[in-house]
Length: 159
Image (cartoon, rainbow, N blue to C red):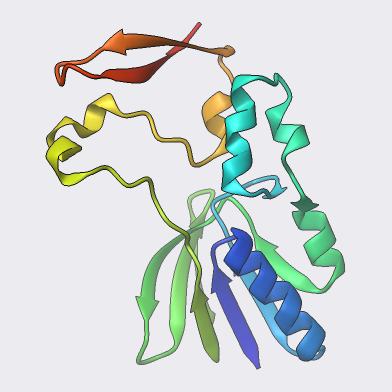
């Protein structure tokens, strides 16, 4: 049995570890766009106060998952899912690969909710989902600025 999990958030990681405990002989592959490991998204708010956010919010490295016999394809994008053939196509470092599965779990998480009246102004919102948004080229600083909407919003400058 080969189980492929797309996504390395709390649902994807929890499923992978729980399934590993229940089915010790199953092949489990976790596909993620992340590079460093599992971190809960709410902890990204610490990025505003800490310079080393990348090291402090990782709760489980991908190396630990690999030690538990879970294959992790990091920095990888899913480009195609063919349900009838039970295959997915992934891309990593300009190389494409097709994988077969018996069960497919899609646990890609959520995205920031922007209320309908504000969606035409989508480019005014800075939504955090990955710690890389805090990384180089320089530290992040924040300040409030007035928008066309007449409300205040956070705007981030890369110094």
